[in-house]
Image 1: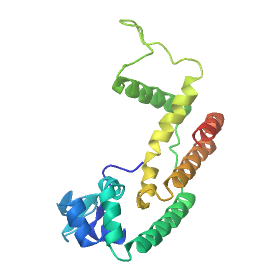
Image 2: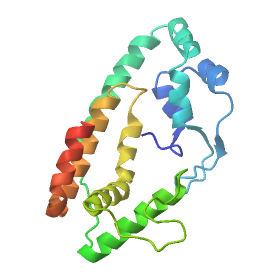
Image 3: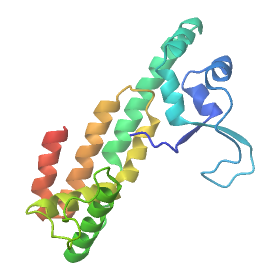
Image 4: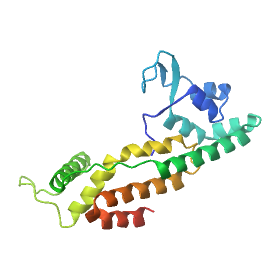
Length: 204
């Protein structure tokens, strides 16, 4: 669930336990060099895509560099545990704001969102006969579509997971975040609570 446009600074990479030599040899040039695109700043920065950093951290080359870097393993392990604890705390306490929409408007947006997803899929729209008019949603689908649309609206909360170090604690944090988002949707829209509960049971 890592956001592919999330960056980490050179200092942030160092805090993850990398040495300057490891950065040069394993990451190479920054993905962005100059002004931080996330905020206004005059100070030059070196930014690396977090997804790329995490990918390198899973390679044998990184593991080998870890062995060669004195004391790095213990420092990295301590940092990973600190980040796991901090991320879990943020996921537990972050207020989840679900969009509040009138029923007809939520249905309209949910149907539109579903049609956009189908249009992007390899098979294309499935609820319409060739050359014929668009049919209504299959029975029971509208509730599922509404939950899917609201879950899509809350995707920004997945950024809470970006502070994790590698895969440490990721599964636990993802499960906790999914549960919190579905619980928030159910609280905001009681008619959708059953579907939210079903998804929590299925997705864990």
